[in-house]
Amino acid sequence: MTVSRREWLRTVLQGIGIGAAVGPGFPSIATAQGTEAGQGTGPLTVRVTRPFDAETPVREFASWLTPNERFFTRSHFGPPSAETVQPDVWRLTVKGLVKEELTLSLKDLQQLEAVTLTAVLQCSGNGRAHHRPKVPGVQWERGAVGNAQWTGVRLHDVLQRAGVKSQGVHVQFQGADRPALATVPLFTRSIPLAKAFHPDTLLAYEMNGRPLPLLHGAPLRVITPGWMAESCMKWLTEITVRTDETPGYYMQQAYRIPETAVRLSSGLPGSAMVPVEQMPVKSLIAAPAEGDTVRIGPVTIQGVAWAGEAPVVKVEVSCDNGKTWEQARLLGESQPYAWRQWQYLWKARQVGPTAILCRATDAQGAQQPEKSPWNPGGFLWNGWDRLSVTVAA
Amino acid sequence: MEWVGSPVCDGGGMSKSMTHKTSGFVLAAWLCTLLGWVVMTAAQEDDRGTIQPAQARQALTLIHARCAVCHTTDLIVQQRLPADRWTVTVEKMMHWGADLSKDEAAVVLQFVTARYHSGAPDHLPSIEEELALTAPAWGPSTASDGPLVGVSERGAEIFARNCQACHGEGAMGGAGPKLARNKILKNEGVFWETVLHGRGPMPAWGAVLSHQEISDIHAWLATR
Image 1 (spheres, helix red, strand yellow):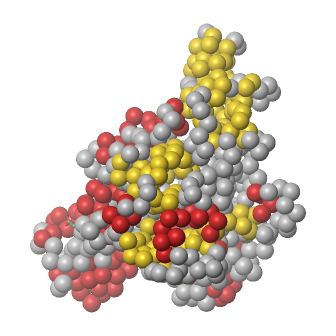
Image 2 (cartoon, chains in turn brown, cyan):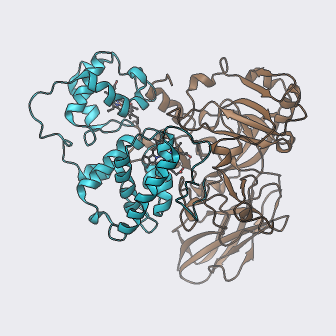
Image 3 (cartoon, protein in one colour):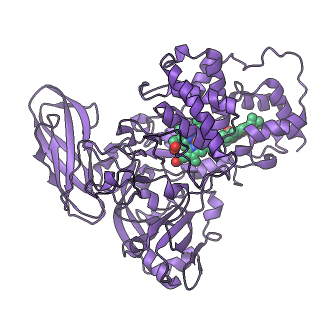
């Protein structure tokens, strides 16, 4: 890295709105831990200061699109220096089992047909803090997720220009981010060719109509709609077509779950570990907030719900700690990959503390469980969302 | 993530791709021995009151100086793990380049296992807050009196171990500013203030390095 720290901080903070959160200085390494940015000091809840891992307070999910500066951010090594991703120096290479190697500038890419879609992006560790027994990793609670509009080109179109050879079965991504020490494995990932060729899999250069911010992968990132975010490589610089899944820590050890935790009736032995891919059905309550006091009478409960590659068909709410469930109203229209907003009008009759819960069901009949199956990496938490409120007279 | 539900001590938690530095097998073997001991003593040591203060200080100091190279220590303090998973985690960090001797690793492992275990409270102070609580105001070497003479040969190594990850090889800059030929070297008051107490993202070293060691670094930087 050749940038000064100040510059680094400036670029890190650019576009995420944290400037306001920390005032003129930066939170010291000592004090940033657990900074509740949602409570008057700023927009994000910081989990790790460096690399900057921070989640969105769920009250932000009252809006359909999550603004760029409120969007959760997560990486393994922090962003590369701003210089390396400047349009005049940045290039994307496409190599491996292709007929013609390509080196493309952002301008070259932008000659291809532009596609825009709205998709949920979620860290597969979102909700890790709810797993029992607890598991190592960033202790995300509810907000390592967001819904944004992505504009870019089809990965398929780029691969087709290069021409994928018949032996090519996996498509590997490498970003420009690098660990502090060269002894740490690079964050390299691959996806199967079928997902890479899917017409909705994008190489995105815009997020919510603005150039991709540095923290979100500028100038180009992968978007695999319906799949967890570790496939959505940021700061993309290399695409390599290969015969096998990428070797190395971040594909072969990390981001894997026991097959049985994904497909309960798979019949496979419990220890077979498979890569995390699709998002399971999930919903969140955006309002009221945890700990709120609400008035007796009508209370609007609202939130969002999504599932991997299937639409959400039902959201239910319980205001008596799970004893009875009522159906919420789904708002707007269903859009593939985007989340769906929902609303429920609760007639609060009894004064005192209570729990509000929600759970969603997708078109394939999958329903959010009370608790997700435990897995050693703490991935794919999709247990019922739950918060406590007090009803006052 | 490696599965450590069942046999932890077969080295199976170590990936084929992690073939750096140390022989994984040897490392696993001694960490397992250590784990046995940690488990035995964990019962008496599940709160800070029963960890010897000197040992706690050494562990905090090591975590602050050696673990924060790649990520801040908030990532460590938020974990609540059983001893076996802590063992695998520290082992993994050493494979990846955390610079700890066997004895130092044992001290760190004992501390994190006792302090950040599965039943520990949700909110615990940061490593830096704990250091401030346990530290004598001017770090370990206030007793060493008289003018210090830095030794630049020693300084090179101390710099490489503690500062290089952020300030770059040859102090040419990285995540932290370039220190070679930096004006601050001439302004010793500010240099010492910054290094002892930290500034923004720059960690405080007062509780980690002795004044002699800081003088050595200063002497070496002055030759750059």
